[in-house]
Image 1 (cartoon, one colour):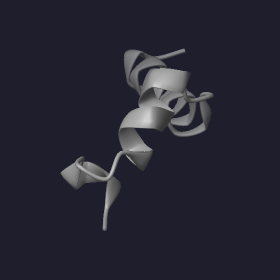
Image 2: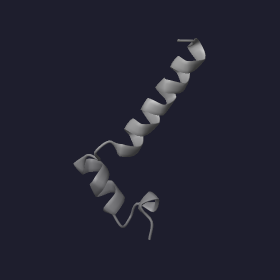
Image 3: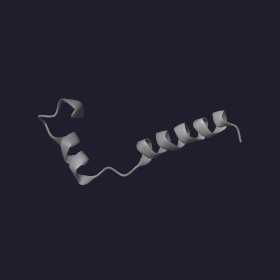
Length: 41
């Protein structure tokens, strides 16, 4: 394996992890909080 392939695999793995990881209870509460601008309106 070349270094380029390893970097691509790591990037894809981290992207998939952050997209599909289960959200914690704290993150869910922050997202649903009405005072939180990131959560939308």
